[in-house]
View 1 (cartoon, rainbow, N blue to C red):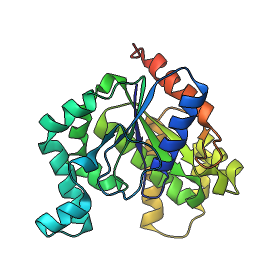
View 2 (spheres, one colour):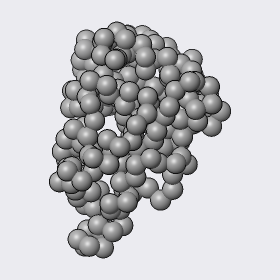
View 3 (cartoon, rainbow, N blue to C red):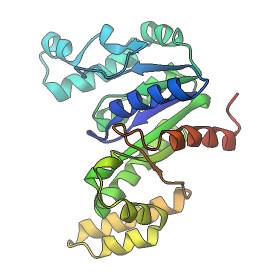
Length: 248
């Protein structure tokens, strides 16, 4: 099973991969490997079985092509696509029942600059997307935007995707977040109470769209720091695949 971790910058993808991989190793009779596709990271809290930085880094691209950080990130994604014949065989050497995949910290360049082609490195039939919503940055508006981003990920990458709350240890209003996620009507009511004109109307309209398309999901709350939610995250991975009949 290939598990792709996505989310906005600062959502804690790398930390959760580290915590989840350690939990699987220590509690489950399953092999697990970590794949780093973030060429911009300076530090990894886990041991990467494949590391894109062995091919290039954001810093090296900035120096070689005289680009700024954002331009270098876009170029890095382009390089990953261009170098598929070299990178894909190395990734295929990584064998494990669970392969946890770490992406660049900024989601937008990956989604809108050919990042979906990187999915060709993997078997899409065995891939699941985990979209992280950082609980510490919660507001009704941000939650609605995060759910829309998650839907875009699902449509763009064409893989099953589930929303997971991260950094739950830093959140003081967990019950309120769960209430909004379980009840779209409650979320829309909170959105209607926001100040603003066209922007507010647009967010409400998009939240209705997400509600029509996305099925009701169990709320998974996780903390890389405390280890909360690792068992639930593990279970939901299997639930998604078993419901699709793709796990072999």
